Length: 420
Image (cartoon, rainbow, N blue to C red; front, side, top):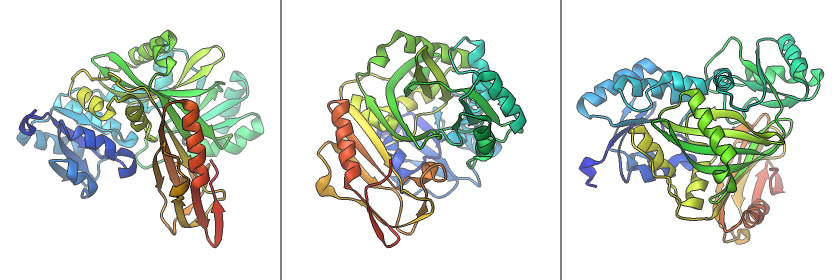
């Protein structure tokens, strides 16, 4: 396709280079990209044909006005965003331009975890029992009704931020403020903001899907590794291209029922489920590509290109989700051991990294003050390693070796390895 005739894609923000550049790299081969950002682009310039710097990318009105001005001189075929804090605003932009994904209410039903629960309950989708509460007294009553242990969850967040498991009324009282007050820039504010939910036992997975005109195309299943109990910090993921859950009829029906219940027509979703003893249950639905390099792992393992799939559905086109490899991709994230640690150096000993290691990246600079979860959460990560291997066991062995190869100096003390 001639570059002059590539579809025109308006992209709202890009996210960190280490976690999202691979998506732009693919998309730019087949699409002309114009960026809306809150600051001048740097590394992104290589992949785009233009950009607009706005006062804020969180103001839907400003975004829509700028989008209409852009479309008047540069007809836009699709709007794409994978930033959790901006996906609702992006839906307003798509609606203003009359494009696929332009359904803010659809996105709102994913962004607001209480609305998600309400829609899934109406659709008969299996999920944990969930009650919305405003005060600790209401939370105690809800937990008594549901039965301990329960999970406290913020209504407006994702990535397990602010989520905690409690076993007793005393633990609930101690952790209620954590769930209520944890927030991130751009998160919606709700006066009633905490969900008390039934604890769903079992392994946790996520499924990244492309949705075009209501048809659901599952791309990758990621097996999640969670740590730092009673919190649910996501410390690793493993994606197998030939995961049998991709062909599991129960998972398939739940995914389709979930998207029907949410009225999800066009876009990308990251659906999290627990494989409980009584069957799979939906934990939450995020209206975007997954984070934590999960789409990257899926691409390396299967050959499916998540960036191109996302761009296709943003332009109202059916995505190509055909796998042509059958490998395993994995990632593990690393943290320091103690709160408020001041880093002197973070690096991997390359001589101890096995050939299966794909990336070994230090993410925290010297001089940074970092903490493990719960204080550190996503921003406490100091490094990560990814692997591409033939089997799940080979991937686990390689990631263990990468952890052993991590060298961290905190203040004046030398520390080998990292808590994970």
